[in-house]
Structure formats: structure tokens, C-alpha cells
Amino acid sequence: MPKDFRATTLERAIGRQLAGWRAERELSLTEAGQRVGFSSAKLSMMENAVQPSAPLDVMALGYVYKVPVVEWQSVVVRAQHAERVRARSAGGPDFDPAADFANLVFEATLLRVFTTDLVPAVFQLPVYLNAVMQSDDPVRTARLAMVREAWASRLNGKDPLVAHAVFPEAVLRHVIGGPRVMKAQLLHLMEVSEHPAVSVRVVPRGAGAYPAMGSPFTLLGFPHRQHNDVAYLETFIKGEYVEEPGLTEECASRFASLQETALGEGESLELIAEAAADL
Image 1 (cartoon, helix red, strand yellow):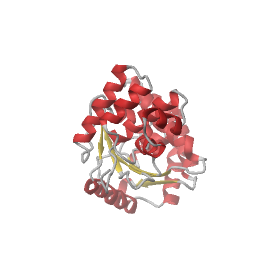
Image 2 (image 1 turned 120 degrees about the vertical axis):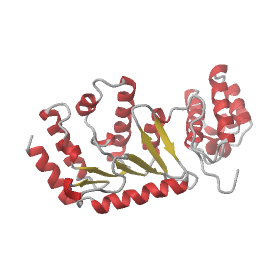
Image 3 (image 1 turned 180 degrees about the vertical axis):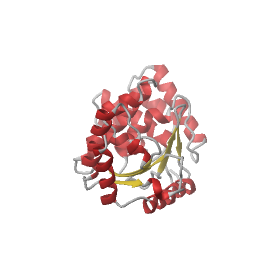
Image 4 (image 1 turned 45 degrees about the vertical axis):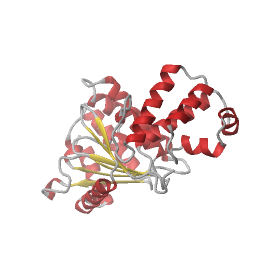
């Protein structure tokens, strides 16, 4: 393993696939390692993307686990691709960043999100999401619901995902789904913003131009040293990961500037309450 190994999102997805195969067969790390000839430590590191999963090792696991040939061959191809472009964040064959995003949200320890038109996905009520996506792709709707559920499942746990959100005041004034739906959404936003792991800040409409204007993004931080920060960008066409440290550092810098431009948390909460009262 390279001394300064940093797993790409593709390698993390491969690790989850390997862990899924073992879980389906109800094997412990020790039992699975004995069957394939790996130490339990090596197998654990592969599953957690703490070391790269070599294509031959993936092939061996697929054979030992009796995974259908087409399925394990697909993962081997992805591992080969990851091996060639490890330093880049490109998604390889059969890898869809948008489909995998909820998994990253579940694994992250820090989420920083800047939206321009909508309430951040992690805070969206189902009725609000349905109103947004009523004429959109139902698959994308389901994926966004998974993102919200991944965050919500950890909110009151021992290790909640810390979520910092910034968005312009216009997000509060777009009446998505009608006054009743929008009011419920704003009240929900007020409720979650009072959680100690959540920070919500609003850029007032009188602020003028501000950093990253018109360019929404999500920045995720992770607990493992081998896992760099990941920025996620999405349009209605596709999702894309950005993993190069220089670029994710630029996102972090822009987010910090956005927080400075926005109102404080207390003032933001008052503005949200005002918008809800106007409905």
C-alpha cells in the first residue's frame, strides 16, 4: 500500500461491495479470510478502503463467495479502473456518483452545503421533495430521499453528522408546493437548526454579490486519514465528485467566506421564522 494512500470514492464503493458480499453470506472477517487466504486485517482494510482492493483479490473473493460471475467481473473491472486512475476522482464503469452520494453522507463526519434555489436535501421534508420533483426523474427523487434519511438516521445518535448549511434568502421565499407545504418546511428547518450538530445561515437579499454565487456544492469530511474531503456537484443531468485536495480546499475557503457573508445563526433563524409567518 502506498505510504500516503487516499481512497477515491470509487474505491470506497468497491469496499462497500466487498463488505456486502460477506454480510450476505453471514461470514465473520476471520471466517471469510480463512476461506480466501487473507488475514482478517487485510480483508477489513479492503472493505473500509484503507488500502486499495487489487483486481485479483476482488476476483478471489467473488469466487470464494460464489458471487455470480457477471457481478464479480463488473467489480473487477471497476477495481482495474481505480488502479489506473487512483489519483483522480473519475467514476469508472457502472459507477454513478449520484447513486452513491447517500453512502458518503452516512460515512461523513462533517457536511458543508451551499444551495442556491432549494432547502438543502438533508433538511427537506418528503412533501417538499415531492413538490420539487413532481415532474422530475423518480429515480433522482428516491436518491434525494436516501440522502435525507442517511443524515436523519444519525442526527440523534452518538456520532451525529455535523451539518453546516448556507443559502440565500430567496430559498425561503420560493413557495414550493404551495403555502402549506412551504410553511411546514420552514418550521422543520427552524426545528433542525436548533440541534447542536446543525448550523443554518442565510445570506440576506441585501448582501449583494457573494462567494460561489450561483454555484451550489456539498463538501464532505470523513474520519479516516486515508479519506480526503470530497466535494459533490450535481445538475439535473448528473452528479460529479471532486476529490483533488487543492480544489476541495478552495471549496472549503469559499464556504468559510459564505458563512462570513451570511447572517449569524440567530438572525438567520429569525429570518426563517419571518418567512414562515408571511405564508
